[in-house]
Image 1 (cartoon, one colour):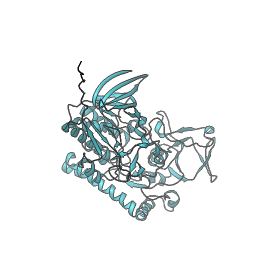
Image 2 (image 1 turned 90 degrees about the vertical axis):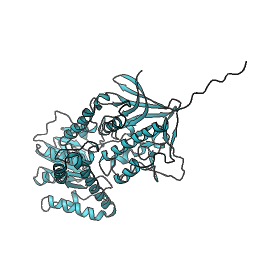
Image 3 (image 1 turned 180 degrees about the vertical axis):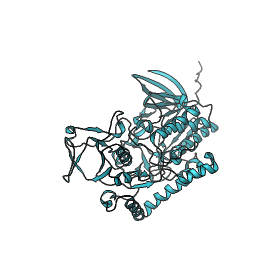
Image 4 (image 1 turned 120 degrees about the vertical axis):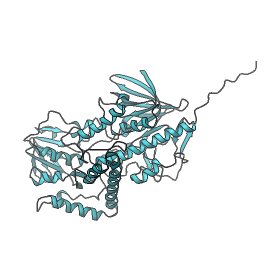
Length: 495
């Protein structure tokens, strides 16, 4: 094992969150040293990993983009390659790319209170390297990148065609003129179906139950007009807040008056689908809006593919795979040359990194998340978890700003350590993510807990979090601070 350097801040992950965190850090503290450790061989995180046809954002880029760097393209619902270019250009223009060490998969981090120091271990090739840092900032997201979720399907081994998971899309897969079945109804499935339908013979979206799908314009006409009138810099915050307000309105209306939103979504689907289409079977979910994330389709492209008979939807349960396709419990058979298992992702807390504090292993489910971004009893540590009801980067930017504020506070007051302490017995435990999506429910027990009240809650309102994280008190009675330990002088006893 070799020690390869000491840094003021160590960031884990060179995706959307990690690049943004580095930008905030070096803008506030140009002389502070930092490094980004990235397990993969390229930056971009999700947007470099996912290569399936049609991959795109599931929210508008005026809120998914960074607060400090305007999104200037006409399309607000952007494709994956455009988002990846945006991230890489951000890193290159700011010189952040020079601080990234690729191929470093962090496996462990140990905090020492006497030294006020993290020792971080990473695997590079077959070697283990060690770095030290004063502050550890985890920007790995919460998806498991090496494997997606695939249910066990009876008879899948006898299927004679190709079976593909979107997370591992083969570069040489040619779907031209093929019959394709996409299993799933979430954001990935509704993205894949119209993209595949452009060249496939036919694409069938096979779902156990429907998802709420809402059509949005691919281009934000107001944003494009404001950018022409005011310029990108001045228009961007206006558009950002406009889109935050619209998203918040839709979410609040969904939670308070779900019947209204359900009716509006249903009417919109009826308008875009062929006359007489069975909307209630295929596009009427059993749950309420925003119990799970809404799926957005730019310019109704999924409905267009269905209307042109390039795609169709089947709702039912799989009985088994056959040599030539899939048989449903209803007895219906779907012929397929290619089956895409868009059956969801798996969550992974903190990228699977093991933490220890003064030799004691940190069991994540036994910790409580402070403001949804720090862990009880774990010093000088932060992580990023974005919103489930809005763009990820809205929260990532706020977390970065909070970390910068905290580092400045430690400096100006001469503190070496900050740690949230959960010692209020009246605070009861809650799931960190109060969300009913399958990928959350499968893994939420492996994550830290949230609390029944602030500051032990993961906020889901950007407007509230702007006040709470950007302007709220740092020394709030829950966060504890300490100065560097003073070495004791040796005691000399008289002879």
